Length: 284
Image 1: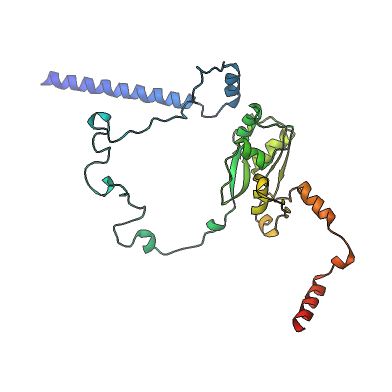
Image 2: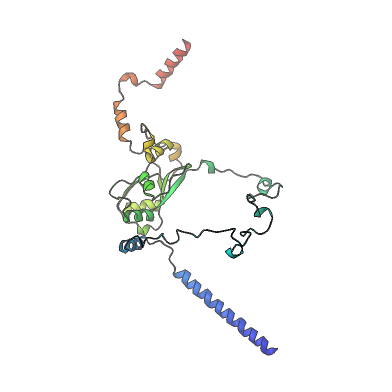
């Protein structure tokens, strides 16, 4: 009995030592690992790689193996496809809504409301990282010598498509040390760090305001018979922003139309004269 006890203690000690070694190795790997995306190395690797039909392959991690269910016991998920036997969750459409408590009054209805939220009236933006912009410039997708607008960012894929609730593009400074290009860019908003980074590289950044019609005319001008007038930013919007926005440059078509409007004195009536005329018409 004593011998068996000694053997068990020795095996336990060996396991503990092995676990400590594994933890120390894992900590070393995690501490030395760099999670920053080095776009310069990716560009250099792509430049040296020989592209042929037999060497084309998708990027690492872009393709995921499809989950195959309902193929019997040898498939890994067996005959019930990982759902178990019977019950609500094994049926199709049997998922339970978040917050549902079986029919009784849920917690979010039992607790009183407090405070307020302006979530519905927020100004949401599609984000674009400054390191991603540098990668797009290095790979030749964006020309830094031309003015970069929100349309160029969306069309080239540097910025995701602007959704219905979003009012423009916001430039963020992720890995600012990688940005070196001198650019002239127009966006709706930018972080303090991103603005400093662009100015430090010798570039220029302009924060412009677009309402919904103006933003649609910028991104999809082919949907307009006549391009609209780009209105200046209202005070109620700029008063709440750290970096106020400016009125964008008008389209050449709009400037031509404005030049054709006659500037005679009869068209320059004050609001009081117009109100007096409307009141006379009503009395008549």
